[in-house]
Length: 306
Image 1 (cartoon, rainbow, N blue to C red):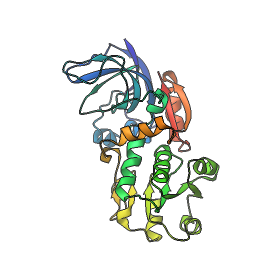
Image 2 (spheres, rainbow, N blue to C red; image 1 turned 60 degrees about the vertical axis):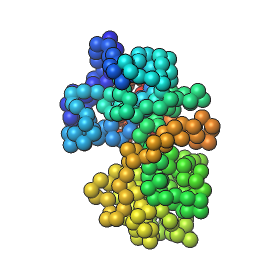
Image 3 (tube, one colour; image 1 turned 30 degrees about the vertical axis):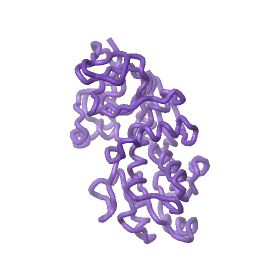
Image 4 (cartoon, helix red, strand yellow; image 1 turned 30 degrees about the horizontal axis):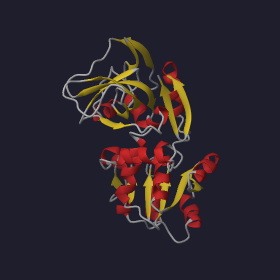
């Protein structure tokens, strides 16, 4: 038997129930992972609240919860090569991450080896946010000398996007609440307040103009970038969906290059990229973790430990 977080129905607010289930086992082409940590992303609660989002991601309700995980392989299915019991791994299992065990299917779920220098709590934050940041930056072609505007810079994707853009040689302007200015600055960005008057504040921070923009929250930053003269093809959104301004790029983690996750993990192992963890919660307090995420005031990442 093992514990997992179960979502019984779509609701707002919703309640996850911690329940026992029979042991999972790895089938052909699968691995069973003893999960040590599971990171939270905004899409997790949206799947739980909205049936249409759940359907889009192929998550069944009633069922499990979460996506990002890190842990250790404890069972290898028939036909699997390159992995063994005791191998540390991290990745994504949509709707199946938040529990003591998960089963991942090679070639379908996201899986990578965890570097020795990276702890499981950190590794459990990478699958969605790391890949999404890499995909968004690639989509708008960030390069040395660019000035990039990042909306939602203090959030889970923003902390990766800032650091990856700076590493590429870009100057980063990040929108945040004044309470998060020091946090955003420490990551390497020039902080500006979001909200009314954003265009004027960005003009002041970047008198020579802005070359590209990432909107990691909605459409406000994308619209400001258009007003600032940024070409639509150099503006990416990750949460705007059909509301994205015409000509801009809608992207996400699924669009990341095959090596993006390994690259992010390698940077963390080398000490050139860090993941700020705002808080960790035991599995029994997963509902508290979700409530904290839904406030929209998280700086960095939240992680549930098993």
